[in-house]
Image 1: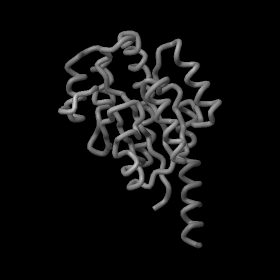
Image 2: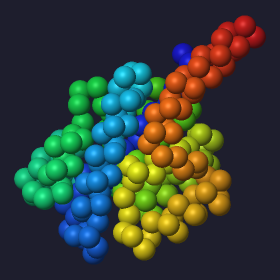
Image 3: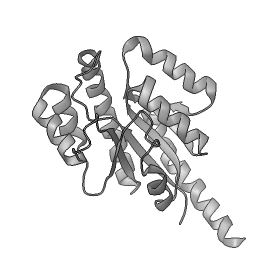
Image 4: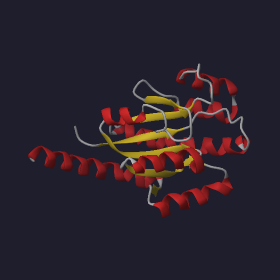
Length: 199
């Protein structure tokens, strides 16, 4: 199987009931609209879409219950749930901490899907997206952060982007750049797979 690119949507679903949550909610809703465009592009190429979301310390709540709670909450939480609720074709995992890799089955899932490249979107850019990017890079995934499809409090956004860029942990690209790259990545992956078969 050829290498694949996956879209990882991080902490898209939230009740925004934490310090700064009321300010972050509308920004996250804007990022979710941009994430929809990415998801459509991945769907068009039949590439995996994976949701990784905090369980907010509720070890009895599963992923569908989390989405349902967001819909019932109203406001940005409901708007985002209506836009990006997982479909039957999507994958989803619950995570206990910031990084989508920490104490989750994500590494096993990515190996099963033969994913070598991750496009990250979601919130918060300065915590969970950043932590996941660092962990992805340390595991030697090619890592891309979709700039417009991420949310952070205004004073934290630019420092987080600078950290990603200066560390080399991830490339930061705009949505249009990511979508344009999908075709190039697919061709490069196909060539690599063909070269492996000839060895």
